[in-house]
Image (cartoon, rainbow, N blue to C red; front, side, top):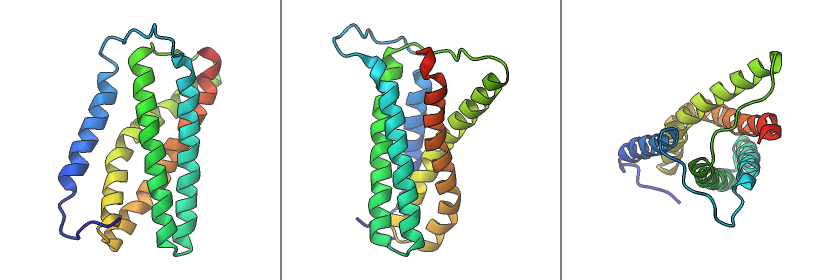
Length: 176
């Protein structure tokens, strides 16, 4: 897939970034949906961690492929990372629209570690939305120099977000 070099993707990046982050923030304030259906939503945090793990693997594979100058497979792995991230977002939004927040039960030093990881994860997850979209669109428009410049920031930050998503799950899972 490729887009025209002159295509103005900035409104898409801005619009999607605002919409996605606004929906996530809105979940903090809206009442929870009644989850008395037969579907057990407690499986969703594990699904989220698995999807974050897939994203991490796909991002490392994409990085490996571009280092080897294999653009075709780099694109495929980036699309796979976006797909697993989109599935994560749907699962995350579903879970948090139906379940109350879970408090971390640890104390002492581990509590500080958990909250540091959680806070940096949340802040960078919000920031990665426009960065990843901008990087994707620049790549699809074959604006290679601009793509490389932003990808040097996007890739490590997106990897951090996907890895810390799994770490946060592992640290809080005993308290669900």
